[in-house]
Length: 300
Length: 168
Image (cartoon, rainbow over all chains, first blue to last red; front, side):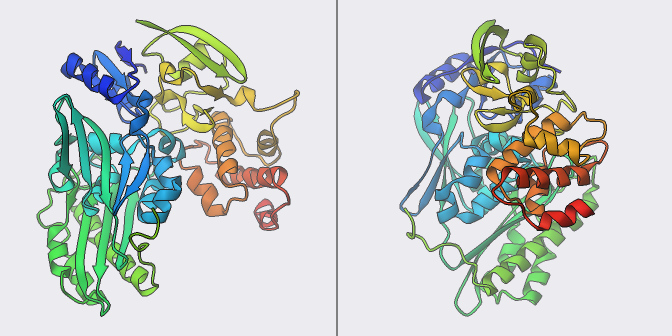
């Protein structure tokens, strides 16, 4: 298989890329790691007239910490997030999430920005983007626009990004030092996409109460979403087995769960409840073993 | 529209005019005649097309040749030296790490990165790092034996745990 013909452009700066995109309009597609786009081109699911390769835009490939925010450039690869000493220090949770995406070869090429913009319903990052309350920074000719995670994922492979915009970076507020975080997924055996993926983050008080719970769900619906009903049932309650088991039963409430060629909608609902429960139990075990997130400000 | 690209392949600079839509694997196989790199699933799952690009294992069926412009590519043909097999190739041969052999070039290129990143890998690391390579003959046990043997050969001293795998 090979793609239909297109014109290839490789801008050397973000300004140049934004101008190209503005000029070429909807006949152009942005190319980052290409591990969703190139398969789509090969299958002729996408046949853009122009590809704008962002690999020459160095500004998009960086990881840094400013204050209490981890900033990851859009073309940072999964392997870079997995292996970055900065990410491992300030938000080890995210390194572990990155290490579970696809396989090593794909992680060497696939990018966080590509994943977040493509918004594949079974992609891993979206669940964590939601649970982490990340912000997406979009650049266009008219300037910069910041979109909160809650407003980002809008439907099947649809996000808040505009056609004229390029996602430049993702801003992630660091977790407080009384937070525990985990990502639990059932990977598809061949593709490693998430059949169900649960990103769970809880902030606990010294006496074991849940001060904050954020649960991102991917894989089961047309787009990633938060398990709001579970979160509400956990909030200001003791974070114990009974409460977790009870709350997890509500995992599918308010979610639009679809069946696919591998699993019926009923199977997915059951998997969703089970994986939410397991993820929350993991959080409890992490808290008991003292495996909290690094204190904010430890490393800059 | 054609593009001039220049890629160092197995240490040799190769300059060509290519169409923007030409995939790296087809550049290697059809333009350069390096047919050791295989096309298996053609959907970035099986890993038979794995090559090293700028030191990283990648699936060459999912990269455009133009994206590889200016990079260093190493294929299965380029890992041995002085007429000798690479220690990973030697280990695959000695430990029955292949049956039909179709996945083997990609498997070996993936293992090369595995041992660079994890010189003394645990069994879990070996399995996790092979996620991107599928063997239709399901000959995985021999592959794992071969990887441990190669790690011993390439490392400073053999890991005693590997004797158990080799005997199993």
